[in-house]
Length: 164
Image 1 (spheres, rainbow, N blue to C red):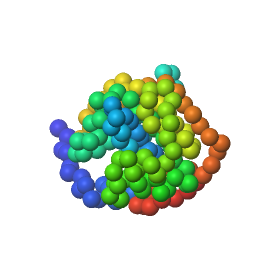
Image 2: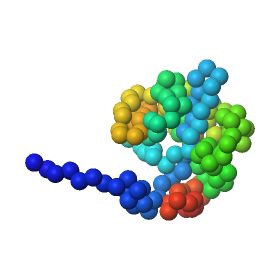
Image 3: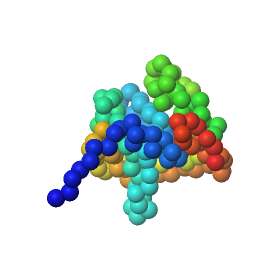
């Protein structure tokens, strides 16, 4: 029998802070309600079919809109998007409309808000949702992409922004 040891969450978060992640803005819309969240927990799943996954904290009931809408856009942020990343991170007390007004958005195929100056946007339909402890893992089939010329990426590491 394996003996499970308890991992101190603070110690774990300190270790994970050394893990560099690309800063992303994930957005959705349901009816007239828009939601956007700054995340680093996102990755490619497959290129055939093209798919990605995002991880959203399930302690915030507002994040359920990503599941109920059935769509999302994953926007890879560049160094020029740092103010936008802060706006959608919850660090500022802004309404959803104020957050979205801090960037320029259009839509691709699904209707999810797509950031026009993102390094890359993956427009997705939700295909599966799994619960993983404190987060919902949302899988999306990519139905459209848009990308810009290569620019410096916005990364998050050691609890701060960096560029690459």
